[in-house]
Length: 268
Ligand code: DGL
Image (cartoon, rainbow, N blue to C red):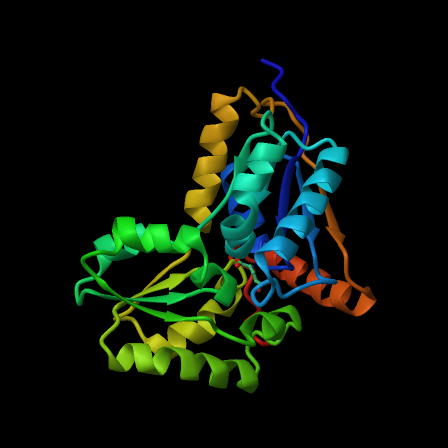
């Protein structure tokens, strides 16, 4: 079988979706990837639904122009705001989106209390409300919109005192309330996992949906007979809408990803 060696398009408001691209690459090493980071317009969290839909349409068109066979919306915020519109606009293109992993968290918690870290736009979305309704009826959810966290991560301040203090303010009230399961509802947050782990200790489970998204990508490729052939020689291209300074942070974090499976810089 020759397979389909066209690339998979992956996008996010910034570098966050690289945590997803990394999971796709780990699971599907034969697949080529085109990654778009909207670093010129990040963060999406405080933006209106209309704006996020417009940006997502523009980026999808750009990635399709690069010959992508599938689009992965590697952003919880853009998925919540724009995925139905994208599917309506391009009915023949398979899209994979993502949402906070509330279902596995509700199954995993023992204290019955789950913390959700996500952007304001995600928390206020209809999609999130439906998710709560379906899967979180029997557990208590403590949410935090993590205001200011995405810009710190975009600036590469993964282990900076400012980041640690902000995270401490976010998780301390959750821990005081006996949260034992934490959902990373934004693709930027896996990059601050070491600091978060230090703050919450081993008794709290932290759920990152990226591996589940990669498995969903694999299933959809198979369903649509779009998987790359066994002899494919994958290639990767990264695009960003931001200025040079943002691109520097972007490539720094990208190279961390390439060097370590989770892309974490221990010294930052
Ligand atoms: N990484 C994005 C998400 O998964 C959004 C971050 C932002 O731009 O506010 O929600």
